[in-house]
Image (cartoon, rainbow, N blue to C red; front, side, top):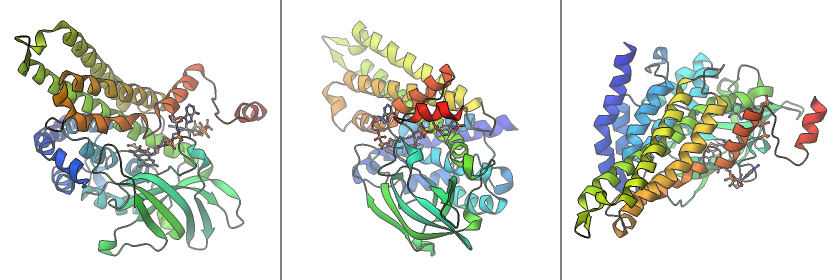
Length: 402
Ligand SMILES: CC(C)(COP(=O)(O)OP(=O)(O)OC[C@H]1O[C@@H](n2cnc3c(N)ncnc32)[C@H](O)[C@@H]1OP(=O)(O)O)[C@@H](O)C(=O)NCCC(=O)NCCSC(=O)CCS(=O)O
Ligand SMILES: Cc1cc2nc3c(=O)[nH]c(=O)nc-3n(C[C@H](O)[C@H](O)[C@H](O)COP(=O)(O)OP(=O)(O)OC[C@H]3O[C@@H](n4cnc5c(N)ncnc54)[C@H](O)[C@@H]3O)c2cc1C
C-alpha cells in the first residue's frame, strides 16, 4: 500500500515534468508565479503529500518527497521550490507541533495549492538568525508582533506565514523564540491589520518567485495560532530548526535535481553537436568532465536521500546529515550546471537553451536555507563534538555555562 502511494506520487511528478519544462521560461522571463503549475500540482496530490491522512494528506515520507522534488527540479526549479515548501519546513513544523485546530486550519490551504512562507531572516539577522529582533508581546488574547523580515520566499503570493519571533511576557521579559501563524489572503478577506508586504527583490534567478520584505506593526496573533514546540518557548528555536532540517534536505535536492537535468541536456548536446568533423561526445576532455558531473550528482543524491530517510528524535532529518548533504549538493550543483553550460559553448550562454536559466537558478542554494559556510560550521561542530559559537564572546559564555 505504502509503495503504491510512493510510486503514485513519483509517477505523477514524471508525467508533469515535461509540462513544467515547457512552461519554465515563461515564469522566468515574465517574473511570474507559476499559478498554472500550482493547479496541476494540487490536482496531482503533490501539495501537502506529507500531511497526515486524518487532515487530508497522504502521510508521505520525506524520502518520497525528495524523489518527487528531483523529478520536478530537473524541469523547473521554481516549481520544485513550491513542492518543497508545500511538504517540508513550515508545514512540517505545524503538523508536528501544532494543535489539531492549527493542523485542520492549515492543511486544506496547502492541499488546495498554498505554499506556506517561512519567515526567519531579518535585515540584521541572516546567518545569525538567533539575533532576530521581531518580538511577540503577550496580551490578553494572544500576542502582538512587531518587526521586519526580508527575503521571504513567496511573500505576497503565499497565504500562510510562519513567523519566527522572540516571545515576551506581559512584563517584557524574554521567554524564547517560537513561530506564529498568519493567514494573509486579501482576496478572501484575510487581510490582518499590521501585516504589510513592503517590496519585492529583483533576483538573479528563480525570477518567478517573489522574495519579499514583510513588516509587522502591532500585528495581533490569537493564542490559537501560536505554535508551542514540545519543550516550550525556551527550546522553541532549536525545535523549529529541527523541523527546518527537512526543508534543507529539500533545498539540497532541488539543487541536485537541477544539476541532474543539466547533465541530461549536456549528454544530448554532446551527441548532437559536431566540431572537427566529429561529435563532441568523442572528445576525451569533455568525457572526463561528464564523468565528474555524473559522480557529483550521484554522490549528492545518495547523501540527500540518506538524510531524508534517517530521522532524528523529533521525526525530522538529522541536523548533521541535512547540513552535510545540503552544503555538498549545493556547491556541486553550481559546478555541474556551469560545466554543462560550458559544453554548449555560446549556445549555453543564450536563452535558446535552458542552461543559462538553470545556472542563475542554482546559484541561490549555497545562500538560502543556511549558507554553505554556516552549514559546514554545523557539520564541523557535530563531528568534533564541540559547541561552535560564532560571536566574539561565545566561547567564554560556553565555558562559564559548564
Ligand atoms: C543556528 C544559527 C542561527 C547559529 O546561531 P547560534 O550560534 O546563536 O545558535 P546555536 O547555539 O548554534 O543554536 C541554538 C540552538 O538551536 C539548535 N539548532 C540550531 N540549528 C539547528 C538545526 N538545524 N537543527 C536542530 N537544532 C538546531 C542548536 O543545537 C542549539 O541548541 P543547544 O542549545 O545546543 O541545545 C546558525 O547556525 C544558522 O543555522 N544560520 C542559518 C539560518 C537559516 O538557516 N536560515 C534559513 C532561513 S529560511 C530560508 O532561507 C529559506 C530558503 S530555502 O529555499 O529553504
Ligand atoms: C533566494 C533566497 C530565498 C530565501 N528565502 C528565505 C525565506 O523564505 N525565509 C527566510 O527566512 N529567509 C530566506 N532567505 C534568506 C537566507 O536564509 C539568508 O540569505 C541566509 O541565511 C544568509 O543570510 P544573509 O544573506 O544575511 O548573509 P550573511 O549572514 O550576512 O552572510 C554573508 C556572508 O558571510 C558568511 N558568514 C556569515 N557568518 C559567518 C560565519 N560565522 N562563519 C563563516 N561565514 C559566515 C556567509 O556564509 C555569507 O557568505 C532566502 C535567501 C535567498 C537568497
